[in-house]
Length: 170
Image (cartoon, rainbow, N blue to C red; front, side, top):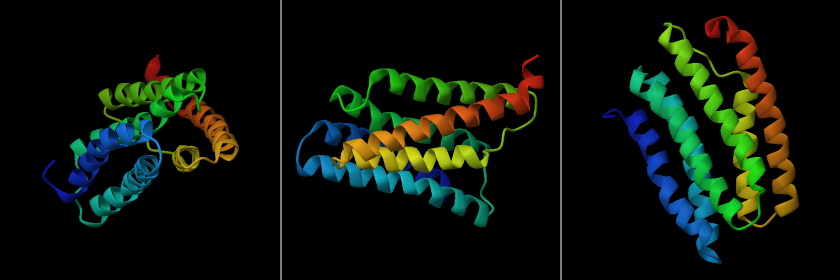
């Protein structure tokens, strides 16, 4: 974790904790939590760029980056569920998909291969980020519409991952 891209990834995980506390607060703290969530989400672009441009792509980074993404997404969505702004069943679908795909990636990796992110997976991440930020900042209808859209994209992406890699599961 000592190279710069991995440290940026680690900061995304560290940012999750204040995000949770701030999103449970009201007023200006919730806005600040939204800013931290957005900045941490955008750091995903930075760590990937740094790793590739500096030739510092590591096995640790390949493992930590998607985990950091899931931790941050959890930090954004769980307080919204707790406050009644996101249905719990929707959060379960979101995280079940994320963990199923992580499991698939682990199985494929154990066989010496990798599951590259597809365009739908990348779009899903952007849509989830936009949805959570909109919900945090009070645009409930637009935020929920974006979240539902993200779930549809997410499920289509998961189906595609499993379709392409089913032979690893046999």
